[in-house]
Structures are given as structure tokens and as C-alpha cells.
Amino acid sequence: MLARGAELLVDGLARGMILSLLGLGITLVFGLGGILNLVLGVFAVVAVIVCSFILGVVPELLVAGVGGVAAVALFALVVDRSVLSLVYEEEGEDRELLGIFVTLGLSLLFEGLLFVFFADSFFLESDVPSIDLGGASITGSSIAVIVSASVLFGLIYYFFNYTYLGIATRTVIQDETGSILCGIRPRRVQSIVFVLSAAIAGAGGILYALDAEVAPASAFELTTFAIMVSIVGGVDSIRGTVAAGIVLGIIITVAGALFGSYLSTVTLFAAAIAVLIYKPEQIS
Amino acid sequence: MNVTRDRLVTPLVFVALLAVPLLFFDPSTTYISRRFIRVMIFAIFAMALNIIFGETNQLILFMGGIAAVGAYTTALLAQYLGISPWLTLVVGALFAGTFGALVCYVAARRQFTVIVLAIVTFAFQMIISEVLVGLRDITRGSTGFPFRGLELPAVEQLTGLGPFAVQFYVLVAIFAAVLGVYTWLKRSKYGLAFAAIRQDEFAARATGVNVIRLKVFAGFVATFIIGLVGPFYGQTTGLIIPSLFSFNTVDVLVLIVLVLGGLRSRYGPLVGAAVVIYIDNFLGNFGQWRTVAFGILLTILFLYFRDGIVPSLQSLVDDRELPAALSGALGRGKSK
Image (cartoon, rainbow over all chains, first blue to last red):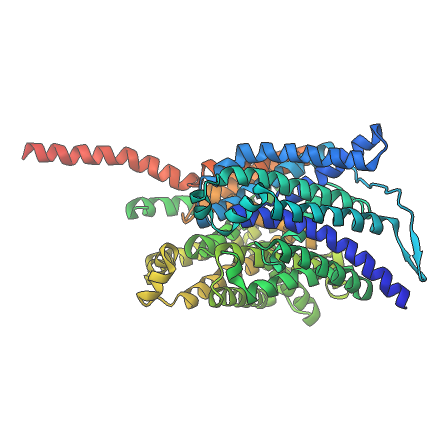
């Protein structure tokens, strides 16, 4: 019983860290420029697809993973420089609305293309063996996810606290006009952070594919999960999003084991609704 | 829209609509009739979105879910009680409307921005989809159940029309009623109050407009309409299944219909629905390219064509009339 509980907790933690990464993808872009990026799930799926193609040539998951993330970063840069530039021309609520509709259109476009050209489902194999801890069997994929995600969180923490660009990003999140007065160019920071968020989502997608099959249809699901995590975490709080992802990951894993998977998904959405009703002013 | 032109357009539209079954419906091929029925259903959905989003700036993204609430309530209650779904239709619509009004009440009370309401309703959409699949004992899960109850055999016999033609006329009647309500709303003090809310909510409140009550009212009307048409939508495929009411199959399409046709225009939803359903059917043969095409359409519409077809045509006509009227007035001025 105790061993089963520990297994669930570790699996939940792994799942939660993936949710945190995806949630961060939403939080960074929305917090920074008010665009709710509905293309995020597509970025995650594309990273997985590129990764599995590279694996066919170079049988090393780390190399393929970095390749997948880099490809998605490039993809995101193109999206940002072309279509999103038009959205950033608007301000305030107009930008938020336009952002939702335009990224919804783009996500349909890319999802459709994925369906046409890569209709298979993809699964990545980690070489990490399962280990036995006091009777609890911890799966290799969970260990791989927890270790890689921890490294990524460390890097993200370092970026936002110790690099000029990271601090500039936090300045723009707090006050766009104020940041201009400090000599920061918001549009440039927005571009860099959009690419960064896509890379983080790509990494999240690759880690997700260690434990579950990823298909074009996963893009929509990953986007919605990411939005809900980001909302529960407070939308413009990086720490909040990470914490929310981990807590929700554990809750839905445990709830899924106890009550079945559909109620665990409902829990996630209900949590987001409850947070929004309690604190609607966090998104404004 | 000016009143004289309106007097001309309305009868023309309805004469055309009434002639559709006589001209195009063929008992041997049902797919053409189904296509026209889909146009009417999506036109009415878009009219409802026009009332809540176009008029009061409340963006709801659970139209599929609300239609499902209406459809499942109507069909399941009729089966449970062993009565005709015509009797439970209003119960389903009322249930959907009450749910929508409740969401709008909380949203208005807690002062949700457009985005917050959009996300909350989207989350509800996901919950409704999950519950419909999950509550297998009641809803029969993802395989759904057949539904054909909203037919009028007596009328078919009396008039000699086929079931699809009767269905189409019922939807035209609902469309006319919704159009009537919308026109009345726009021309009454409600229309003024809606405009005030849209432009500046705080100023509206300061001048004595009861913002919460009006938003809830618009929310109730819109979701009631969607809940009412939901069962008809389920009947188009003869099968009520959760995937019929998903975000991608209903909400995305309705948004495109409304924006393409023209936000806050009276006939925009009908024009938009006709165009979108035509494209939808045309692309149906190309599999997932359909999704690609709608993605491109949605992106381009919002970036470059937010005015919509009907308002653009109107301003085109007005631009032509205006110089003529102006030069006429100037000419008279000179001769005096």
C-alpha cells in the first residue's frame, strides 16, 4: 500500500514537472505580452516528431532531444517574426483577443498539416532502467523526466535571476512602459521569450513522449493542460506556475488511480475555473 | 442599415429561404438537404454568439457544450419519460439557458475580462466533453445513441413535404424568431444599453445601466437559443455523440461564421454560415486539409478582415450612394 503510494507520488511528480514546463510556455508569453499562445501544444508535438526522426539517424536521445528543441525554437522564431508581429501591433484587450483568435487559427493550420504529413503516433524510449526502492518500483521514464526537468528548472531559474535578458524579461512582465523607459526594447524581449517558451514546451513534449504516445491530436490536449496549469499558478508568476504544475500533476495522477482518468481531467479544469472565479483580476 | 433597404432585404431573404427546399431538396439525395439544414443551424448558433459576444462583449467558448446540454437533456429526458422530444425541447433549452446565465452572472459579478470568461467557458467546454464520455451509464459514452425524435410526420403528410424540408422550415422559423428578437433588442433601449456596455462599462454603470442584469440577460438569451437548436444539430447526423459537440466542430466554426459574415450585423450569420458550410463540404473530400484551410481562414480573417462580408458590402453600397446624395445636395445648394 505504502509502496503503491510512493510509486504514484513519483509518477505524479514526473507528470507534474512536465505540466510545469508546458505551463511555463503559456505563462512566459502571456505574462510578457498578453498573448495566450494556443500554438504551444503544436510546438511540443513538433519537437517530439523531429526528435524521433533524428533518433533514426543518431541513436542518442539527448542529442535528438536537443535537436528537436532547436528545430522548434527556429519554428517559433519564424512564427513570431511573421504573424505575431501583426498581433503585437495592437494593445491591451484588443491584443489579447486578437492573440487568442490568431493563435487558434495557427494551431488549426499546423495541427492539420501534422495530421496530413505525420499522422502516426510517436513514442520515445529512455534507456534509464527501472529501480526498486523499498518495494516501490520507480519507472525509468519517471526518473529520466524528474532528472531532466530538474536540470531545466535550474537553467530557467538561472536565466531569470542572473542574466541580463532574464531580468529584462521580468521587467517587461511587470511593466511594459516602464521597461521602455529603462532602455529595454519590449518587442525584442518578446521575440526571444516566445522562442524560449517554445523551446521549453518542446522539451516538455519530449519528456511527455517518454511515458505516453504523442500524436498530432495531442497538440490540442497539451495546449489546454498548459493553459489550465498556467492559470492555477497565477498566469504571470513563474514560480506559481512551476508549483501549480507539480501539485496538479500529483493530484491528477492520484485522482486518476483512485477514480479513473476522466475525473482526474475534470479535476484539472475545475481547479482552473475555481481559481479564476476566486481571483479573476490576475488576468487583466 | 437604413430602414428602407431593410424593408426590401428582409422579405427577399425569407422568400429565398422558403424557396430553398422546393428548388434544391431532392428525396433521393439527402446530402444536399442536410447541407442546407447545417447552414440554418450554424446561422442560428452565430446569431446567438452575435447577441452575447457582438452586443455585450462576452466571449463564450462553450457553444458546443451548451448545444450538447440542450441536446442530451432533450433527448434523454424524452426517453426517460417516454414522451415526444418536442415536449422536452424547451426544458433542454431552459436548462442550457439557466446554466449560461449562471456563468454570465458569476462572470459579471466577479468582473471577468473578455479573456477570463473565454478561458472559463473553454474549461467548461472541456468538462462537459469529458463528462459526456465519462458518464457512460447515462449518456452512453463516446458511441452515443440514435436520435430522430424531432420530426413532424403529420405535417409531412398534410403538406406532402419530405422530412428534411419540414426540418428546414422549422429551422427557418426559429431563425426568424431569433432575428426578430435580435432586431427588437437592437432597436429598443436594450440596444443602447448594450452599446454603452461595449464602449465603456464603468461609464455605463455610472449612467445607471444595470450592467450585470443586462449581461446575464444577453447570456441567457444566447445560451437558450444554442440549447434549443442543439437537439436539431444532433438530429442532422441521426446520432447524438460527444464528438459532434466538441470545441473544434462547433465553436471554431461558429466563430469563423460570425466574423466572416460580420459581427453585429443582422444577416451576417446567415451569409457567413452559407459560405463556411459550402467551404466545409467542398473541403470534406480533402481530409485534414479542411483543418488547414480553416486555420488559414481564421488567421487571415482576424488579421485583415475583421469587418465581415455583410458590413463591408453595406459600406460599399453606402459609399456609392453617399457621393451621389452629396453631389445632389450640393447641386441643389448651387441652384438656389
